[in-house]
Length: 344
Ligand code: TYM
View 1: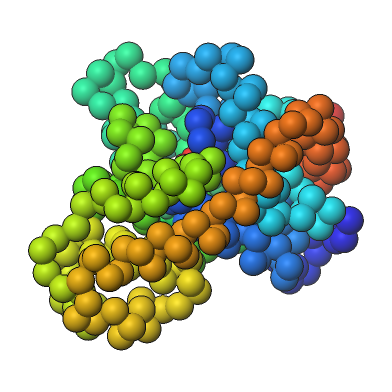
View 2: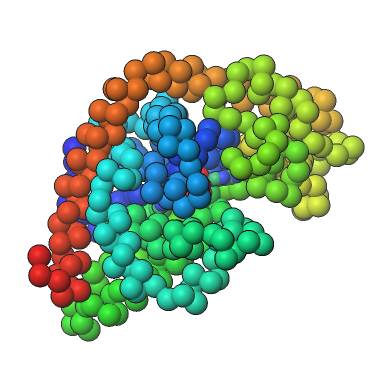
């Protein structure tokens, strides 16, 4: 394990994913694929955020099995558990402790602006849990507990990371004096690649999401070759041939989405992919996309199934990861408690 304590100009990544059902192509292209690439250059900490998951009701046994599945998916996608840290959030109690302290820094007005709370709480806001409302503060605690400098996520998490920056900056103002170095560096969102927001296969204006009632709207990392192929075959399109410029994609959400997925899976820019398929119909493009998606995702789902045969081993990996995470978290929280004025 290298550079556990952060010094000087060192970078450190933190990111997380909720164990609420199967991971899908949006989670993979928007986050996990980037984690796999970044872990070689920047020391990285990845968490399966079960404390976040319970902000909406979860069935306890299902939460456990989803945590195993998500851990298996992350490892099968290429996260190296000897190089990076992987653990489930509730094993490191410092996340909850810091969240409380940051609850006392964050302002209600800041939380009232969070669009994801409005979407998730829907019309019945009064019935949403306090946890769902305070969710972004826990997320700020996740990031700041490790003094993380970079946070690779999909586009939908940008507002939450901006809030984490506001909380960090406010904490610095409250607890570090002018002649001292700021306690927290402000974490930067890393929203990378051509699939920053993967959209539903049934409606190109809606985000691909675990909570969509239609399974046909998303490709799950556990889908078989046949399921991947059928979902792409049935994916909504429009009647026009594929265009040659980004400008022409503007009012064609489904074409834009499928081409972005292709470009991210093939590690090419959207411009390059447009050149390749310009003037071609979806009947030409879709089989190529199916081949590429199956070629990328099938080895991941096979490896996932393999790892899930031994859930005790997955538990060991997560506990071991939590131990390493705590080696970083504990001293940071101690410093924070000191600054706040707690005897500890
Ligand atoms: P979650 O579990 O909803 O999603 C995990 C990651 O997948 C990305 N993502 C997408 N990217 C592109 N297109 C999509 N359709 C799509 N759907 C999801 C998300 O942006 C995310 O990067 N609050 C977070 C988890 C979290 C976290 C953190 C992230 C908790 N603490 C600290 C970063 C840092 C969430 O619910 O992600």
